[in-house]
Image (cartoon, rainbow, N blue to C red; front, side, top):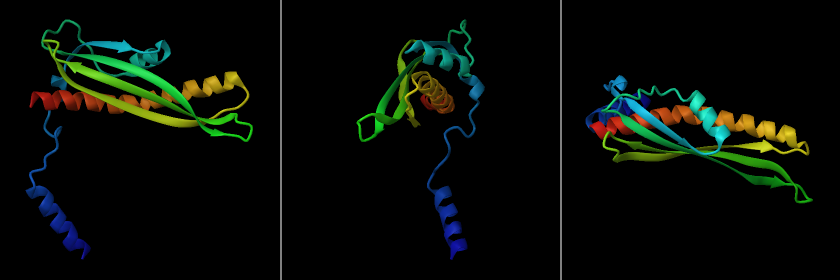
Length: 157
């Protein structure tokens, strides 16, 4: 029964016209000539330092990006005295892609969050928040790189 189901599924999938967007695409043709960053300085510095998108400033037929990074935190759990014991730290990256005529061709928002414990030690809590924000940004960078390339490729097709 399982073999029959798998054979039927494969036949159905191949005959429906599905084909991956980035299957036979040359990603080296995606050229970026400018990236503008907005947001809190610590987060933008970390994003700039770890974003692995090559920028070639002298290209005429290249795309430009505008990245806006934001952070927020909210109380998740409180004790009986009303003091926060856990906080949700969220980071959101909004991006816009512009073509050579500075026309918007795509935009998207990526977000991730983590729950952290809050103690009475403010300096330790700040350090934990900073580390978690950097971990979130690291995860979002992978999604961001793929999303940017996918939107540029889909606009070219």
